[in-house]
Length: 208
Length: 395
Image (cartoon, rainbow over all chains, first blue to last red; front, side, top):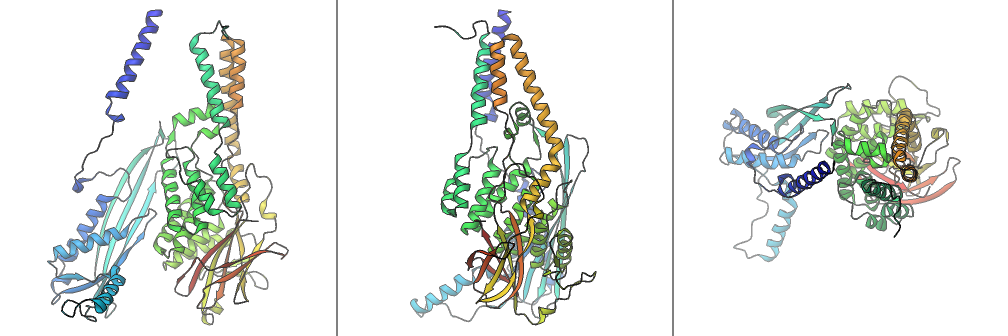
């Protein structure tokens, strides 16, 4: 009996030591990840989806006949993507990325006015008008007006498994991104594109 | 030195000491900063209340509760961004609690329900999004307010026997109206109208709130006759009082509600109407959970008796001690979001097109003035609609 007790105590002590010192789960671990292949930890919209959707939509716009047939440069303004979701999606991150990819893919045929920095722009021009030399100050009243407006909406739909005896629940998320380019002169939607994806995730209902 | 319980094996002695320590720790351990913060909040000392909850312990079982309380305190301080972050974090933590924790579940069966992570009643979780929406309305972030609306709807569509909330429905409808999703807004306005027990009608097309006095209830929407003439409208979310704690008895809707009158430049613009009473919501939620709670309490008591009996068979004195320790830990789980107001009311009134400030006069049901506030912030604008809210913590 005594031997068994000793064995149990020794085993527990060794096990405890192994867990605390040897097990990787108890150590801090930092590793860089390939941003092109980020894993999804749940069914909701994440960084990889931001990348994929922006890439697909930008490619679709840049390769479209609408862009190709435009004489000269296309000056656009982005008025945001509406997040019609239940999660707080940062759609400004999407438009930032969209702008960047569109400029790259179109070889700067598509140009954007900086709508988010207008206040700063005016402030700087005012400062230059008062303080900069005549040779270096930027001319006022020469800003280019946008001909097209880029807007969009990200739609989310969610389904969950119903109430039943089970140990896990499955959640299905569907996302659809619609991007529209509107002619500011006529108000007509000149181009529109849509991308979608769905993802299911199973989560345990009982955990430690 | 005389040894206590000489015939008892050492591991049992250690267990008994640990149990007593645990009992003292768990049953007697309150959260002084939280209580102080609440006291400061209701005394109108919002800054001090915020300081009390400056450091919220991570992974604490009450983290959601701390965040809910701090969110409310910060909203009343006008710190809408940080208030929103608190409530969003609480929402994220709540989503994670869908997974039942075995360890906490078992310990709640041995100790008490306070061992479980706080989630709040379904109405508290729903109202959190209604208050979060107000943070975004104050920041003119209509898209994020609409996200709150969708979360409110999502929760109210899965009630599972818990009470529906007219205030939540109206807030959802209003946030959707602000992003021009009028169809879905009308659905929510209709749902809110169905829930209202007070003599108030809601026009599902415009969201107008009208008293039923001298108005014939009809199936057709009420014409927004004043739309053509009035320059603007003010939608003001007015909250009054304090959610009572503990078990709620009686029907709070039978109590005559206080209300608020709105004035601008000494001109009477209109009054608020009650859309929800949190005590009534709490009472209904408690009744919904009563059977489940009773079964759980009975199981826990049976388990405590079984444990103490098992120890008693080894040692009478220790058995009694364990019995004492286990039942000393028995305490009802009365945790709730205490900075929630008692009355949730809404006023939708015509107002001047250049509204900069307005006065709210709080009145009891008999019309006696209880106090007043001049509101200059938050007042935001979307088209011809001004949006604002205010809280009277004193009544």
